[in-house]
Image (tube, rainbow, N blue to C red; front, side, top):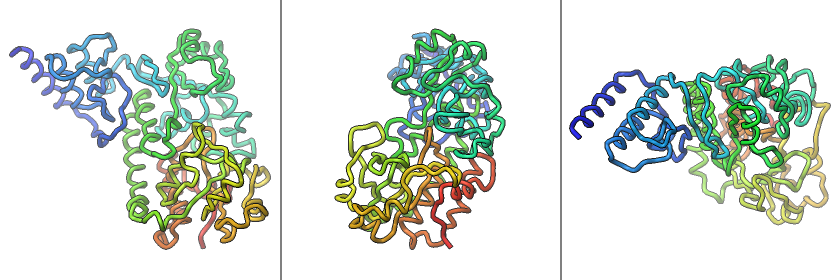
Length: 433
């Protein structure tokens, strides 16, 4: 035992001498990478100590302590954690967003984004867009509507300005039905897919292509009501493509920006918060998000929170909207050209004869908001929270320059200026004099 303790001391001392990036504060989130032995939100010296103690027969073994993923806990696991911390690991085993255990070879240089926009957006924001070798039809030319190709003239995302080269990438079919032969021909190190009903099982795709298939999604559980969950996509993706430092910088920045709002809205009593109804997916007045984080964090009360039984959206009746009597109605609007307008307009709601008794209509407090499209973008969600905070509480945020803040937030994530201004123009967001 004395020899083991001496060995443990040598291991820990050696690791301490290595330069290790500062980790984020621990939270409830568990980073799903094998090597995160203490199952917090990062891999650091605490995991070395925890695993070394397991080697000595001390403590309770966790699933992620088996960093080599070989059903044994020994000093090789300690070495693997050290290599992960240094970015020198040859293999990495992780839990994806479908709770599947996937082992990948490192470094990852070729990524196929066979999902919606989650994988693409995350890699661009991490500065790893050069690793993307193919995308899906739905993100380039149809389905959700030319989301990457600026020549479409209709739909728009910040990706068109931040990574215009993406429009020239090959397509691997749709996210529901990827072209397996093409996946094989591209020889990807990993393939990001969207976890959705109607898609071939992920394990089958992996068996047929031989490529590691990873479900990567910023839209899981109820994270529209919890930014902490949706931000964690940066940690997992960063660990996969070797952008851990960039991931922590974005998460830290996001936390700081959100606190600028919540430090004010958290002190506002519920009786002073507006009751808010959000028209989801633009087209359907009676379809609304069951949870929506920007509303809560901006100091509003989502009248539909928890309604229905769907994963995200609830179907309600006009009678229910009238009964809720919201003070504010938000209309989710995907950024488009002025000549390409979908669904309900502000004027449609204000002139709807059935809705004339609602506070929001009587007081003309009906506005467009950016919302979400083809996945959830935490960056635009944070910018939207600043916008909603001033809509909901104009006195408390009288000095807030929403456009300046929004442009700064999106520039931090995308590296391009004036993105919020363009988004506000296309979405016809409310502007303050």
